[in-house]
Image 1 (tube, rainbow, N blue to C red):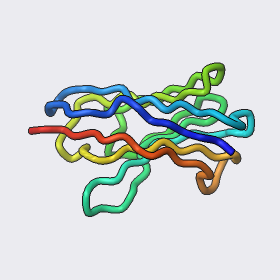
Image 2: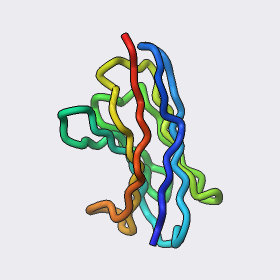
Image 3: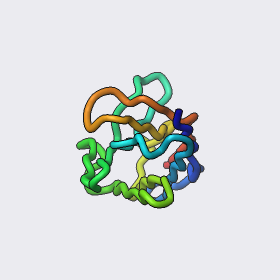
Image 4: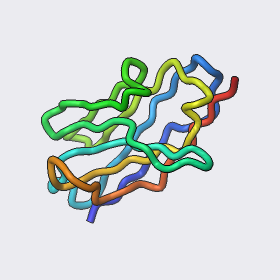
Length: 118
């Protein structure tokens, strides 16, 4: 099994930035892609970004150009830098990981709250 723990969320003013981190432990050698999702109050969880084992990153249109994602395979961590935040970015942000290059994510963290004030 793999355990994922997010950190770095908080309260920030519009236009501000945060760096979210995800630490993986357990059978991390089995992981391929890692991703970030978010769920705003009253809304469904949505994809934010993902990064493959080779470092290729993909972003949702709503965050492209504002968010960046990186991964440190040696430290088993993944980070999401969120910039130019707006109140619409307020959500619980979840880290996820999967064994395969594509398909459903197998492991999920508990989430970290990001709140953006106007």
